[in-house]
Length: 204
Image (tube, rainbow, N blue to C red):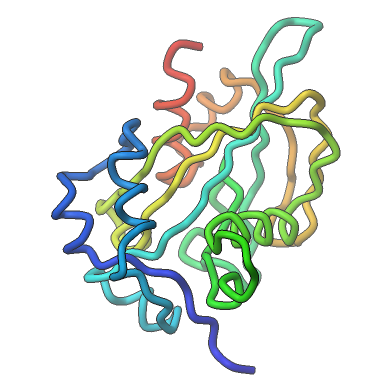
């Protein structure tokens, strides 16, 4: 089986746009020139996991639903299993679903970014609800070895119904939790999920 080649952005390109650390709400300032750049490339994933001079572009989808019974926002969360995914995040709780854009996602006529995001979602979860998709920000966290080689694009899916199920054992214990419940288990969340929780739900 040939090695997966994933979409990467040169770190220098990001730096040329502006300083980026943590959660940046001005998503278009960074994402528009990144996606339009001729410096994007598909490179072997294993090598890119160890090379911070490139950032792997990751759509990261946060799914929320408001329960009409109590008017409380609930967010889909799960525990990362120890399967074929990112082993460095094993046993962490996450509120984000998504993954790499692969070279194969560029084979069709559609935008590879959109194709890759849909493919990753379809692989990981089944969503049996209508929803709106809002692109909320970009995220870069250089505080750990996983974060140093990834650039997240944060999407908020606002669902009409809480009908989401995990398709893979790597997404264990999938459920919708209130913001209070998530904050109670804040220390168990992976760093990206902590940053998204703080940025997306600071007023709730």
